[in-house]
Image: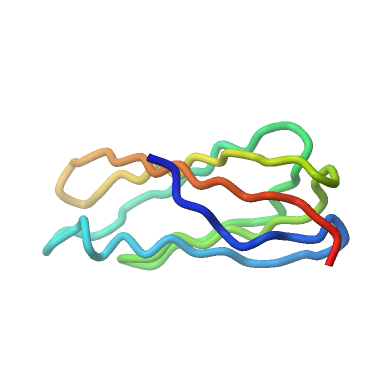
Amino acid sequence: MALEWPFKDPDEVLDYQLDWSGRLGEDQIATSTWTVPTGIVKNSDTNTATVSTIWLSSGTLNSAYELVNRITTTGGRTMDQTVRIRIRAK
């Protein structure tokens, strides 16, 4: 099931986070990758032991995008989370 992030204006450059701590238990994020569809731009991404952060810009007005964050953990698990973001003028 996709999570929903707040609306984004196509001219904004904003950071968005996924907090994985509820699913990780005692485990930690080792690597984090984002799959971003054409039309919205990933400027950069980082992660801590429990949180994955992505910076986004652009986007087509009145469009919705689904991004996927895949993490691998220090314990060897692989987890995915889909997030939807809608683009509209503010």
